[in-house]
Amino acid sequence: MRTSFWNSLLDMIAPRRCAICGGRLSPEESLLCPDCDAELEVTPFMESPYDNPMARLFWGQFPVEKASAWFYYRPHSDPSKMIYDLKYHGQAMLGEDIGEQLALRHQPTGFFNDVDAIVPVPITSKRQRQRGYNQSMQVARGISHITRLPVYDKVVVRQHFTQSQTHQDNVWERRANVNEAFLLVDADKIKGKHLLIIDDIVTTGATVIACGQELAKAEGVKLSVLSIGYTKE
Image (cartoon, rainbow, N blue to C red):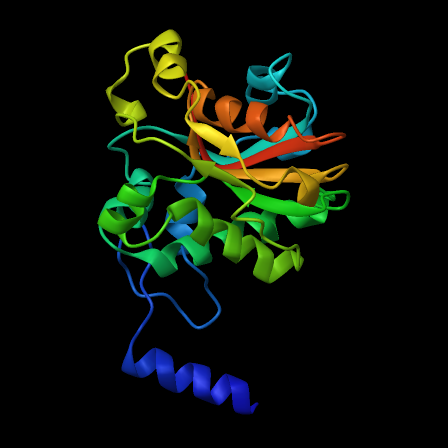
């Protein structure tokens, strides 16, 4: 009762808004209003996480277990707004809210059951200074709130600045753009563990592949992937 009262009072003072349309949320709603939630083109990947178009991107690239994304991503679509706000408009806390929703939607399927830790795809220190935070880290924190899985944000680092992947035209350009972009710095910590890589958007998978291949240098590592969006061809 007391928690409900304070939540209702806070909602009156600073009402929460839908991350897509900006409409006011009711006390029972989280992140999205019912209309925007219903309009999302949700992927079916959580129903078959071991074999789906996203998981197949990583087959033969690193020891991948499973992969999933919340919804199909289309640039400049209404749902893309919350990702733009997270990455470019300084809304760091939005990442944690998105991460919580990712976890809540995947947890009933057992997606996290055999995962040992979460690894957000790192960004360079230069990008971190410009943005003020790593969007994948924010999402990872939200997932951790729900799953209680630890976040390993220092086992692999981004060692050089690359041009945004959105400026690359094809899979080969994207892979070349992130070639040797990551460096494993704490192999002992992840030895024998099943790690969940978190990225915001997966298109060709080039960034995740580069990160995953570096993590796979640690002995006995297994990897899974979870993202907010997956770019549908």
